[in-house]
Length: 138
Picture (cartoon, rainbow, N blue to C red):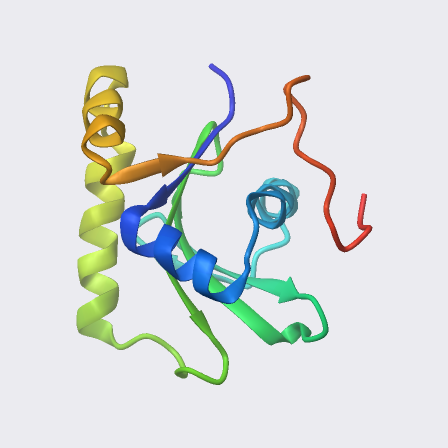
């Protein structure tokens, strides 16, 4: 099975607003695959800080990602540090339920969600590797 990365429709809109690129998301997935994540929130939801140009990781974006640290990664929810603090328990439980649902999808269910616009697939470079990180990181 090949690595596939997705964004929810809401997360995709948010990334456009703050100029968080697919290359940055792919770099963060590479980091998480190497164990560099900021918190395991339970229920297959992890928190990852993502550096934004000029802000670094401390002042950058926070992403909540559904994953089993395997082939599929779903960016569920994002926020900037200056927008909010940590997510509350009720919202986290909702994201954990969504994570369980998405991680249980078979290929047909994924195709349906993609066609409906509920999910957006993060594109890789033509050669199958992640696009270069615009921050100059390997």
